[in-house]
Length: 196
Image (cartoon, rainbow, N blue to C red; front, side, top):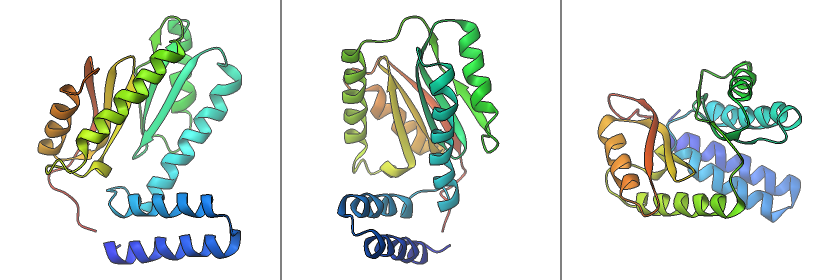
């Protein structure tokens, strides 16, 4: 789908939501998501399915592993799992539960075995993620919408569909961000940016 057509289709959906719902916060969120999707290398269907995967994963994990701290992030049907669990067996079970979601292509299980991190550590990870994303803005080498950042225990995980040059630039910016102890790439590489 051409970028202009995709934009107008998303704008129509957002406008329809305004008329049907009359709820400003929902519409504002919908319009924000629409703007992000226009510049995304994923199709609209994959973008929505990534959201569905995250919801389905949370649903499967919340009852069974309620004492664990597990974060699930999906990008182009590839799932990154971070956080802490109490045993290697639980780590394996969490990975298996997510792999069983029909649309999941791949699972990168980065769970660590040990006690759950403190709220202050998680707040610090959120701050680091914000700093990395801020450094990505207007960097001149890649679009911020092409790289997703997840931080866990000071490790910045980078996901996205990128060229080697874009990936290298993102890694370099993340690596040189205050608070980042390590960078892990969970990229899908393309030869050149796809045209839509």
